[in-house]
Image (cartoon, rainbow, N blue to C red; front, side, top):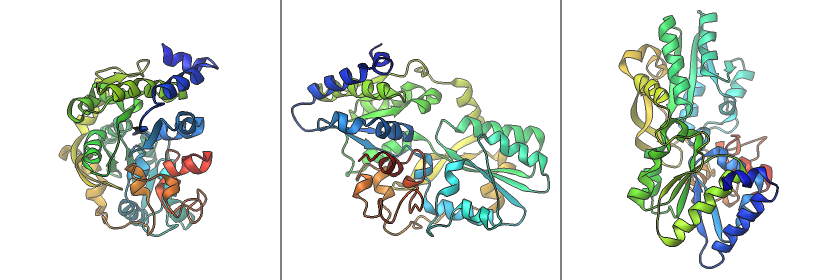
Amino acid sequence: MLCEDAFRRPDGGAKLAQAIREMTADGAPVRLMEICGTHTMAIAKAGLRPMLAPGVKLLSGPGCPVCVTPAGAIDEILRISALPGVTVASYGDLLRVPGSVRGDTLLRRKALGADVLTVYSPIEAVEAAAAYPDRQVVFLGVGFETTAPGTAACVLEAARLNLDNFSVLCLLKTTEPALRCLLADPDTAIDGLICPGHVAAITGADAFGFLPREYGLPAVVSGFEPGDILYAVYRLVPMVKTGRPGLENEYTRLVQNSGNAAARQAVEAVFRPTASLWRGLGEVPDSGLELREEYARWDAARKFGFAPSPSAEAPGCRCGEVIRGVCTPRDCPLFGKVCTPSDPVGPCMVSGEGACAAAFRYGAE
């Protein structure tokens, strides 16, 4: 495949980039949005934006799960972490995300004495609950369809072990409703989408078929090597230029059209859709997941309460606009001055998948 040449041969990427530049030499730039934070970081690290400019404009969308988690949710997490007898278990990125008060993070709370556990897998949180029956262990279930099966598995394991001191604060979000919300925004101006390969590994590539079918937007499910992304752009540009949108699966070495049925069944058994609050998008119907009634015993929102304020955002932070592709990180007046990776104001500068962190680290737009 041409995409394999692009990242396995030294000259493959250059040839693809040249072909893309030739196709976009005339006319307005083709505006393509990647909706995956891993793509955002890969694009910045490989320097793809200047390589494809001015004919292609790459925009970052709501593809970083930490970034789309609103400040009000972080405030509630911080409140729960301060409750006596509670251990909060989380993936690493979330530890440094501030709430509505600058500098107030789980990492700071840990330094002040809160019991905060960093985990690489939700099963580690279940194991901690089993090992310390006198503690209430709350796992922060953040992520998209990619991490939802693992979170479902930890709930099923807690149920099997009958662990009353384990619960999940479910912050999981789903991609399609958010994309529909984004595309309904009059400020959204994109010509095609680079779709997340790891989400599609669960949902199937066909889950993105609504983009060309209902919105007339070409879409390519892409892997994460620079060559994958270049090849996705190479396939998207002709569809935009000819006005013949379609859906293609570039990431065939991992993604099937129908996805992972076993993973989806586990998620459907444990969770049901619910409205969810997104940074930058507001409340989006059916874009989140909540525990079904039969697993209510392990629902941290019911056990400890969870009522995030929709207006709790850091003053001046433009993360919500960056997430929607309305502005670039450098358009934010705080970028690189008040807001840096060592002292971030918003989550886009914290996360390893954040657009602002990518721009700061690699000097990208």
